Length: 143
Length: 411
Image 1 (cartoon, each protein chain N blue to C red):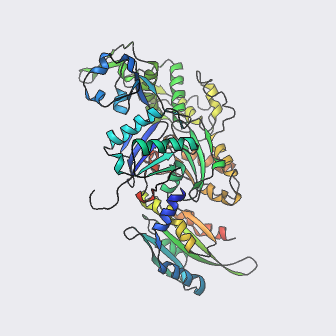
Image 2 (image 1 turned 180 degrees about the horizontal axis):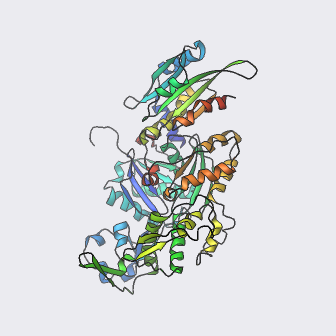
Image 3 (image 1 turned 90 degrees about the horizontal axis):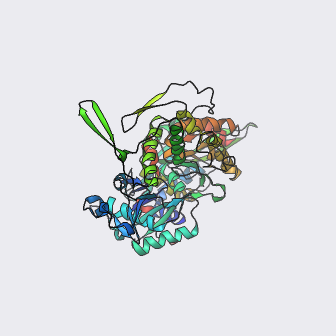
C-alpha cells in the first residue's frame, strides 16, 4: 500500500493557498475554520470555504456538503477547568455515506499528504455522519 | 477509449465463495460468479456430454488432464462425473490451475478485455504469504502480461471505500471471518484474527438441521416441473446415476444459502432453546414446489457467529469444528483484536467498525454486534458499527477504487 500512498499523495498537489490560509488561521487567528476540497480535474487541493473568527462550530457543520467528501480544520478555543485559555486545532475528514465511493477513496488515500503539509494539528476526527463530529465529540477529545 | 487519457484498471477479488471482477472507479463489479470450478478428468473425454457442440462446452477449456468449467451458468448445467472443487482453502490458494481458469473466465469471458492493456489490482486476504503473492504476480506478469499490478489487502480497500484510513474491518465472507485493524492505510498484522465461521458453514448447518427434520432438498437438476393446467404443477423426478456427490452438495448448497438469505436473522439476545421454542414459523417454497416451515433455526443458525459452540448442538455438524471451544464469537474477536493494538488508536477503532462481506449483510447482525460490543467495551469508548445501507452493495463494497492508485510493484 505504501506505493499507492506515495502515488496518491504526490499526485494530489496541496496548493500554496491552502498552506497560507492555514498559517493565517494558526498565527493570526483570522479564520475559525477552513474547508478543503480536491478538484478532480486538475488534481489540486484547494480551499473551498473559510469561516471568519466570529463564526462557530455550527457554521462549519453547515459548510460541509451532505453528498461529497471534504477535509476541514477547526480552531477550537476553550477555557480549561483551571481557567486557562486554550486553543486546539482539529482536523476533520468528512466522508458522508451518500458521497460517491470514488470520492471516499480519493479523500481517504490523499489525506496523509495534506496532513503532512499542515503543521500543528492536535487532533484528528473521521466522520461519516454529523453525530460523529458533534460538538460533544470535540469537547471530549480536547480534555 | 473514449475521451479520457486514463486507461481503466481492472479489479479482481477472488474470494472463498464468489469471485468479483470489474473496472476500477465503478460502483459495482461487472462480473460476479462462484469461485468454484467443475472439473472432469480428461480420461472420460469420450463421454457424449462433453462432445456436444452447445455453447456451454465451447466456454470451457482443457487444462492438463482436467477439463474445467467455470461460471454460474456452466456450473448450473449438470454433467456426468463432474466434481465441484474449490481452489481456496482457509483463505489461501491451494490449486493455481483452477485459479488461472477462474481468472481466464473473469477477464476473457465476463469482462471481454485483453489483460495486456489494463493495469490490474488484485485484492488479497490479510493472511496471504510472501510465497502466494510471488506466485500471483508471476502468473499475472508472465501469463497475462499485465502492464502493471498491485496487490492490496482487502481490509485496506474496505476501509478506504468508506472514506476512512483508520478503522476496524470485520469481514465475514463465505469461508471465514476476519477481523483486521487498519491504521493509516496499513493492516496491523499482529492484531488480525480469523475464524473458520463463514457463510458456507452456516449454510451447512442449515442443510444438516433441515435434513434432521426429514426435509430433503432436491437439487434443481434432479426433477422436471411443468404446468399441466394453469396454476397446477407436476414434478417429475429424474435420476442421474453418474452425478458426483460434490456436485449434488453444491446444488443443495445453492438452495440452502438462498433459504438462509431469505429467512435467517441474527437474534437480539443470545439464542437459547427454551425461549425460541414457540416462535412463529416462516414458510419458504423450495424449487420443486414443496413448502417448508422454518422456526427456531432462523435465529439459531446466525447465532453460531456469536457463539460458535452452538455448532455442537446441530446434529451432523459436531465434527466440523473440532476446536469449536477455542474459536471465539464475533464480539470477542473484535475486542481481542482491538486490545492487541496500541492504546492510542483503540478509541478510534471502537468508533469505526466496518462490516464487509456477504455474511455481514444478515438481518440485524449490525445491531446485535453493536449491542454486544457496548456491553463489553470500556466505558469511555463510543462504539459505532458502520455498514453500507443495502445488503447487496455491502457485499461488493471493496470492489471500487480510483484508477490512479494502482502502481507497479513487485512483491
